[in-house]
Image 1 (tube, rainbow, N blue to C red):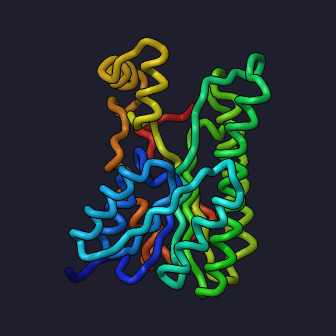
Image 2: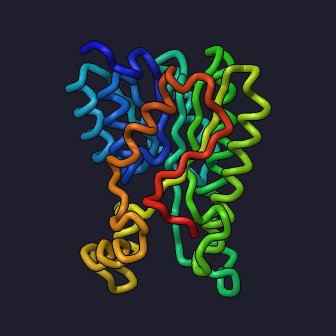
Image 3: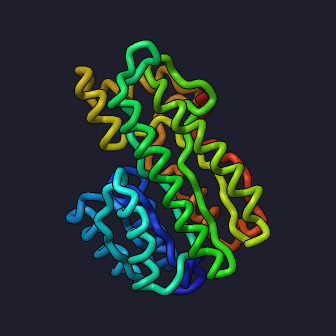
Length: 256
């Protein structure tokens, strides 16, 4: 296959067994990247790796419990052990529990911050370490419109996404001289497995969820996983080699 945008690159994806993470892992492979999938669902990861193989590329699954910092380190160590380098890191993993400021308990707060922020922080630490050895690379943090205040019942989640925005700016500012770039991709309202499960707990079907979202979002429909593919491939490719510290919004016009 020719003219593939990510040929020769090694990209790590945290949360790569679900939702947008799984879709983009397969698409990175389609574009020629070797993809290291971090997550807990081995069966899902192996299916994606088989798909990646049909594109003439390769993949690796690393079982990753993001609340365990050693696992965050292992995800990158195993990637380098097999492929010799890291060119990209897409931090997708995260959770979105209901958590209003005045009712959020300590356990919920700690779990959100440990998975959404602490794990990302130490994954980025590993990514920067290895990208320095490789003379550069691209980090993309998964953002949310909640980062700018958020809905009332997503206080802890909003804070976790806000601090990722600060982390993105920090990396972009301080590691540009190492040719390590970092950008923040603001995802919109997407019917991922986690979102559908959360709404199901609230008594809402996916059809009802989509109908409600269509009535709220300015562009009239929910985002699909494929809506993010072109942006993520661009951000991981050499075409964006001079782009860092930027915030991409793919939200169907949603501003919370």
